[in-house]
Structure formats: structure tokens, C-alpha cells
Amino acid sequence: MTDSKRKNPESLTEGQVPKAVVSRLSLYLRELQHVLRDGHETTSSTQLGARLGFTDAQVRKDLAYFGQFGYPGIGYRCEELILAIRRILGTDHDWPVAIVGTGNLGRALLGYKGFGNQGFRIAAAFDVDHAKVGERIEDIPVYQMDELDNVVRANRIRLGMIAVPASAAQIVADLLADAGIEGIVNFAPVTITIPKRVRMIGVDLAIELEQLAFAVVNQSQNT
Image 1 (cartoon, helix red, strand yellow):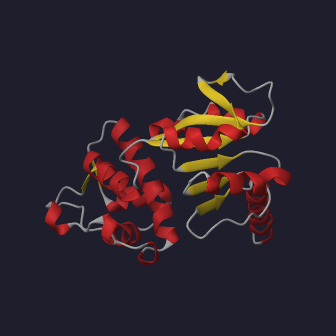
Image 2 (cartoon, one colour):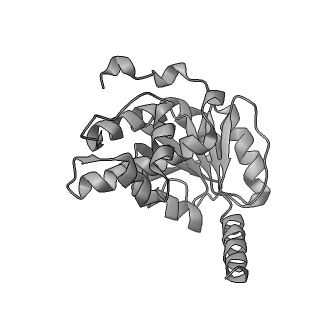
């Protein structure tokens, strides 16, 4: 298909695309990258869906929100579809990220190489512990919290991650929002409030384990 038959992702509003579709786009992207690394230049909706446990119809329906990407007799060209999905997700360019908290979780996040593979670069870390300020963890500088505004502006940072204890999460969220951060991933196990202009995703690993335990228990009861 030519580019003229593809929708401009920027013309789509957030409400037009279900969140579940956006989540599956990330899964499609990962699988396409795996397929390409395995040496395959093309794939089909059937093959892609089978790898993820989706139907071919679901794959086609999800991608149809953004245009037509398949070729008759060929299927999807992996490299081309990877570029298209990255453009849709907004990860076709570098995203500098700030992380607040350099404890065990923060250090693990700072050392995670997968961020860079998907277009995210942790540009700065922040902590209230003066013993950590001035260090470099995984070659990322650690700043004190009162430097947040200046560092965010200087590095044009729009995304932030909260990796602090629950008791400090709301304060950190307020500081990030005031500094101009537009999107936050909150790893603290607590609900926080943010301005409407800021988007937030909460990641509570205990909740994920609870959901998994529920699924395992109910699967056992039904077998």
C-alpha cells in the first residue's frame, strides 16, 4: 500500500483508539522485531496473531485503525511495519526520561537496557539522599531534587518515572508536573492525583501478582 492509503496518526485523537488496541500495538512491535531478528523479512496477520494468542482478524482490525499495511500475496513487510508502529506510538525519535528514586528499584530501572532499544533514554536521575547526589549510576548522573526544573528544561525531558516509597510519591508527582513533565510512570504502590494535562500509568507489581494468583487459582478449580 502507498502512504496515501495510510492515516496520519497525528490526526487521531486519544479517544478514537481503544487503550487495548494501543497495548496490542506494543506487543505487535516486539514480535515484529523478534521476527526480523530471526531473519524473516515478512509475516502475516495469522503468523503474528498466533505468536501472541490473537486471531488474524484481531491483528487486522487493530492495524486498520491506522491504515492498511499489508500487501497481497506478501503479508506485512516487517521492517516497514515496525517503522509504522513506532511512528504511531511516537517512539520513532529519542525520548529523554527522568527517574526519581535511586533505591533498589530505581537502580534496576537505570540498568535496564530495554529502554534504549525502544527509543527511551534515561537522561537524569534524582534523589533526596545527598550521599547519592553527584554519583553516576549506569553512567546516568544523579541530581538533587531542587535541580529538577533546570535539568528537565535543559534536557527537554517530557517523561518521568517515580521509584520512591509510597509516602513520597504524591510529592514527587507534584514536583514532576510543576517541572513540565507530561507523562509519568508511577511504580509506587499508591494512588496519586495529577493535573489533567499530565498522563500517568501506574505499575504495581503486587497487584499484577494478585491478578496472576487469581488466574491460577481459578484455572485449577476449573480443571
